[in-house]
Length: 147
Figure 1 (cartoon, rainbow, N blue to C red):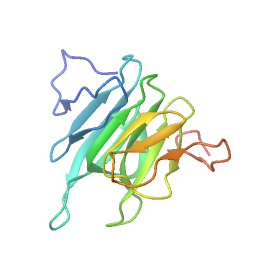
Figure 2 (figure 1 turned 90 degrees about the vertical axis):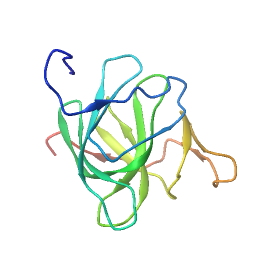
Figure 3 (figure 1 turned 30 degrees about the vertical axis):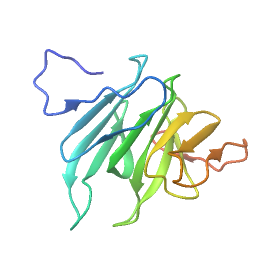
Figure 4 (figure 1 turned 120 degrees about the horizontal axis):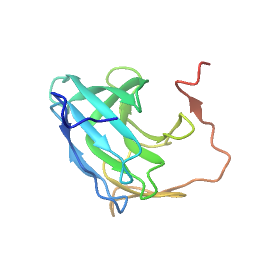
């Protein structure tokens, strides 16, 4: 976890504890969870022409596949779910929900540019599309579980 006594190139970005997203990008970022038990590090990796930055991601010390897009980031109020823009392949933009406790993630069917996280609902900003309601039938992808 983060040690404030260490020299660290990551800027600490506290996100709203109510599940609302906030914009961040164009630098290396550290997102501590609302309860302080988890952290997501997003190391600045570059920028496509005419776009937001993209970042290498480490969740609680475990490398995460793909890249996070600079843009909207949010923690759920319970600190279990982290939501952000993501790309598995250049320059595709998706939105993912990371379950930091189970070390798994789910790609939403449509990207959301801004959102509010209140499981089982991921709600977009009004006018930005349909909300996503988790049904329990989602197909999650494991990361960092050795398999």
